[in-house]
Length: 311
Image 1 (spheres, rainbow, N blue to C red):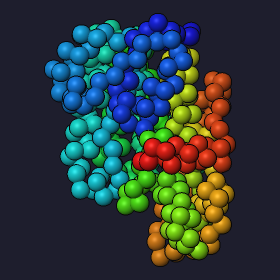
Image 2 (cartoon, rainbow, N blue to C red; image 1 turned 90 degrees about the vertical axis):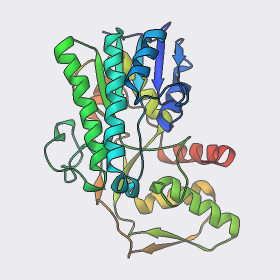
Image 3 (cartoon, rainbow, N blue to C red; image 1 turned 45 degrees about the vertical axis):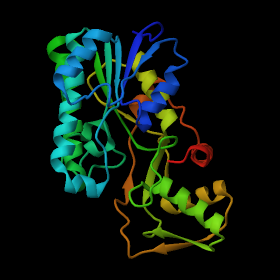
């Protein structure tokens, strides 16, 4: 059965974030009323405040994209914050959604929910089959708990609550701070600054051999809206492009987009990380969504947005 968003009140929790912002942009064409609440307006870790907000606004559909996020250093330094705050906000939103009769909820997971040494490409069945990556296990455990809570509401109460976890994201709203950004926005900034300064080389961590998958955040939003309409099951679905590139290929594509042929210098003293990380999104593609844009096109869009808006 197809769920329609037309004419519905749709709450995007976490609309100031990268994914939440993309969802707001995507929902603009769905003929629905998009509900948002800033942190100043609603503290999602406050159970009573969340319950009161849901009772007052009565959303009919919810995209739960809010989360406390951070890099390796933050996860290692503040494990209580990443575990407790994410558990609190997820539980508050999901339970309040059920209590107020929300028709459908989509919970956003993360690819870090999977075991560190999961077989590649990573299928949904890999969940809870091995130990997690220690550097972000606090965040991962909270996300797993959110997925399981949605499954529990389906089993015990018949609630139409679903989950999805994206691959590596990039695009509008990304973090371009070289101290703690991910590889794609970091390389975009490095090449741009090298071009501006006329520096002849760009130094990249590692050997350039690891394989990674990337998805433009607006494509993720499109996939999530698609799933909200057509998917209803307890299996948390992977959302990815299905295409992997080496870090070397990524750097070369970014150089082409920026328009600067700098010499690539590989700092092999720095870690490569996992040799390969690819999500198996065959379930999503079998449902009928496989509209991820090409990497060069997506990076060009991200670069144009960053030049205007920063990040």
